[in-house]
Image 1 (cartoon, rainbow, N blue to C red):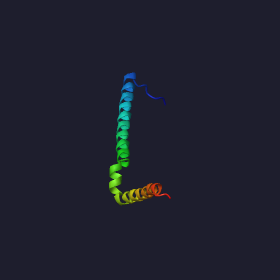
Image 2 (cartoon, rainbow, N blue to C red; image 1 turned 120 degrees about the vertical axis):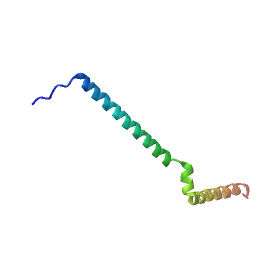
Image 3 (cartoon, rainbow, N blue to C red; image 1 turned 180 degrees about the vertical axis):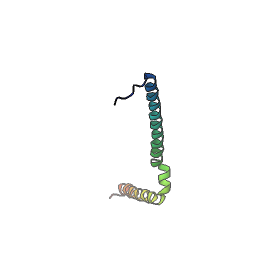
Image 4 (cartoon, one colour; image 1 turned 60 degrees about the vertical axis):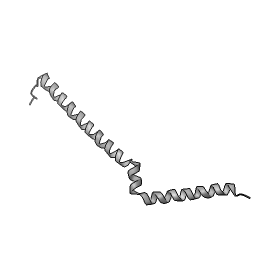
Amino acid sequence: MTQPVLPTEILEQRAAEQRRALHNDVQELRSVVRAEVRERTDVKRIVRMNFAPVAGAVAVVALAFGYGVARIFTRD
């Protein structure tokens, strides 16, 4: 059995519709990925959610830095 021959205009119209649909899908995927990346890399939100561990780590680093600076000035 042979395939029926479709007019060129119909084929061009289908191709244009498929391109538009593909373009819309890609745009939607990009916006979803952007939103996901923006949410995952939001430093303020991450710090707010993990305030206690972040504050503890900052305190330990500040304490170590303070001891290091004090050691420089109090060497015998």
